[in-house]
Image (cartoon, rainbow, N blue to C red; front, side):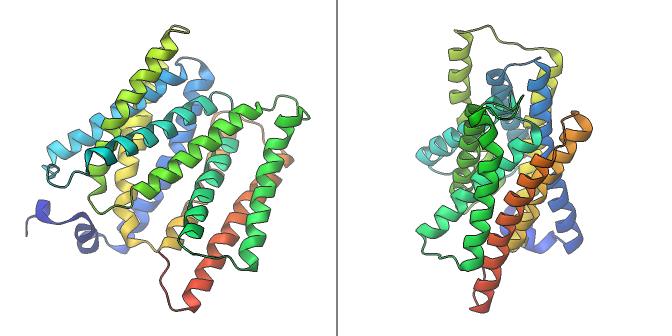
Length: 316
């Protein structure tokens, strides 16, 4: 059977060995970490503005995805989602990327990754409750611990107690980015080749990115330094487009709890990268809130796994 006639899940089942799954998963986490570090580095240096970074990231991501579809002759006309679904997913993707950029102009890489991850998991938890899932005692304890850590991270900005802390608005913008990514992930559960779906979503995000750029250009001229442009292209074509393809190649072969647990590594790797590569400070306050947020969410994830498995059901 020719490779291009295989559906994406069947392709994964047939050709993905355990070693390749592990490698793809690790590469995906590195790509997600790289996205945060690249965005923070670009906007911290001031060589590009947030609106232009967002537009170039989405444009280069779309170009890379459609180039892959064309080169590999991946069928896409008959498996494309409806136009309404493309517009909604495109807008949500844009909302994530734009808020991500504007927040990282002010928030450190590690703190931003923590807030983003907590927001994404909140959306997933809310969706689970909507579908009838209920927490046990350990899960409620984990959730309380995670939200306590999130509050402790944001509180100094709200009260002005910590000198040099980002504004509370910057943290709230990152929360919006994480919530949008959570919604985008839920919308992406539809059946179909994720390469094709992602390509359409990136394409339909471009009009929204163009409108944002035009609106911001009316306020101040864009900054398009060579270094910032390179960072945006690396983020879009590399860490985003290729990162998503690698992640969705591994995802069908991973248990739900495994997929959730490996993502716990991203905030930790991002914080470490921010310290080593961007000279961001490492404080006891950040260490404690990181342990609370990541540890609390890990408790939610793994307690859920144990409770579901005891009933003989596979986590969805």
